[in-house]
Length: 428
Image 1: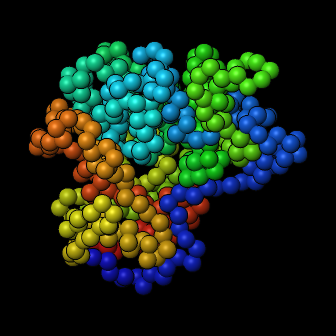
Image 2: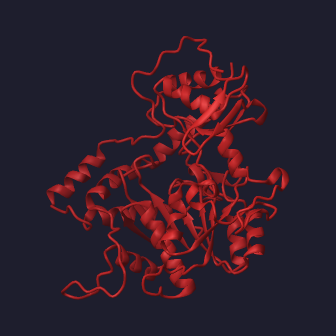
Image 3: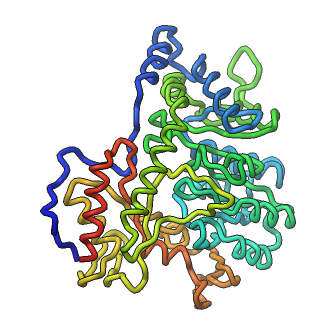
């Protein structure tokens, strides 16, 4: 129950969850595109951004696209074609096949499976990283041994247990599409996320660690795959003096103007990561005595990019909370709180937070899809839940008790101290 013990005043300027942080170099390269009249999906900025990203990540090829979702879509399309051959007319390359997907993620991770006429099978989350659970993935292969594609995300900039996931996929002959949209700059055992899968994707959306306002990148070590993605992303035009099309294409190429913004952002990636890490550590210190924990990561193997700082409220410290499809309700209790109360209180003080991602298996559009937990239960085609004890539906539990805190790297230490006071007061 919130008690304004320190007579806290609302912020004059809104404290954002994660807004773009611009430095001036972005405008220089955008102006360069205007001066050279390259206001199109070709130009020096695109070429340079592809070079810079490939060099930073450590892959041979990077293809600049309009958004991270476009990169994921073309990665899934490539995987489907590699596994099942050319698509039939008016049908995607997955042709009705099942695909194992991260459950705790934004829907852009899994929608490309539907674009390509596949069926997502959602794999439950594990509590150590809030990412795909390797044990649940292994159980899923026992239930659906025919599956040959896995789409795995790195939530909030924290690497998943990607080595374990890759070992399981290798054992079952499955390809990996790695969604590193939120984790650009994060590493697992010293290796950049986006490099572990057969295909990788990152995002430059307006709220990401660096931004172009939009934009994304497809990552690969295969020249053939990079060439195919470039072709598909420019409407699949053939090498002819007229517009010749022999397969379906998309208008997915990055604009040279957007690339100018990304080009100006790239030198500041490490600085942004350091700022985000400092925010995470200040929250962790500030909440020491509260019945909450920060979004976790494996300190031995992982170095996140700390894109968003989140907290998980201890079960015994949760006040009563229910959610309909669109609205939440809660009952205040002394000494307890919930994600809804904390987010509403932050909003009263002009600060933006957000619930953690609602798991995909709970989304109305995907409620009939299979869902697998760590001991192999969950729900199948009958949509029936099987209660399997403590390991049942980790993602739903995180959604119930978790929230994302203001993580904007322009937030001052003093402003963050106020955020910490507001959160602490909710448990008053």
